[in-house]
Length: 41
Image (cartoon, rainbow, N blue to C red; front, top):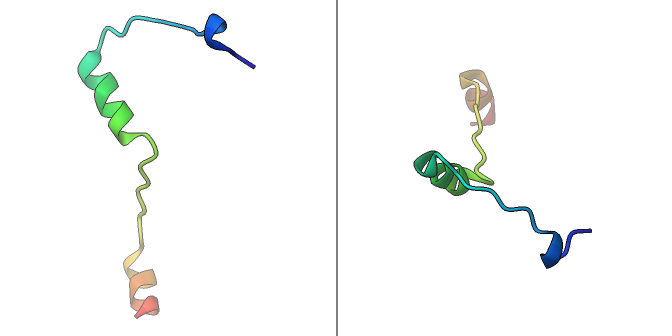
């Protein structure tokens, strides 16, 4: 296990993309087929 003494650190060179990736972290995108929607209704 890592503790605070073993923390890895690095410098991001693409801050905007990094921030967007953090916002998207945990996002779930579902692609639902039209046939599946019709069968569901």
